[in-house]
Image (cartoon, rainbow, N blue to C red; front, side, top):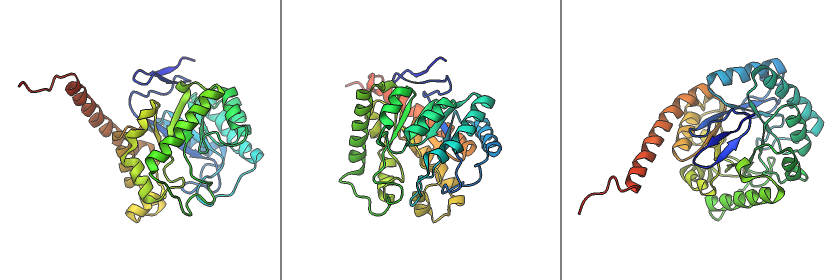
Length: 300
């Protein structure tokens, strides 16, 4: 299938489904019994497919399917169980909608099974650091999102520390991009994610959001996943199912600060907010371009 290109970054993702000239929405589909927000709601194929269709109708262009919770304290899931959870859902979504499906996993065996079932992207919270994951991704040759996480899901929130969270996360992602290139994954197939909520305090997360534009120095699309996360609960005092307004606000701020892909639960509401934020971002960029070209300079 043809690639879709971002003319600014020269980036492409396969499947003809993703347009990166404006921020794009990745809908979260957890087919798990224990995910922090929607565990157990979509762990049957029919329910998962219905939710995928709903998110696509609301404006998502990628469906991110996950079969293992990565919330703080989450237990590990056996490879075969994870495969049994995700493969039928991926097959159904691809068969019924043809949309781009991302597999949210760190296990090479799950990556292979998911891509074999029709997934066209890997979204890895461990940035291909598990044994065999980098080699598998290089063999599969599908786009990969590399995310930063300090520690492991069970313990990552116990006492996260950084010299400077943005500088440290950027250095990590730079190293992982280089490792991918050395393994045979073209730079044009990579996306980076600073990993909101994965081994970060509230202050760390706010700093990442405020300085998200710095990650564009890598010249790669930036994904932001903040939807319903505990940082929003800490800032607002709201429970998980009361964080819609905060999630939409965070997505809009991420868009204004340079995010290309927003990974979200509430697609329709986020789509509306991003239309406003993207219009403001485009106008701001146009004004900066005019200034850079000398159009706005005053005469002496």
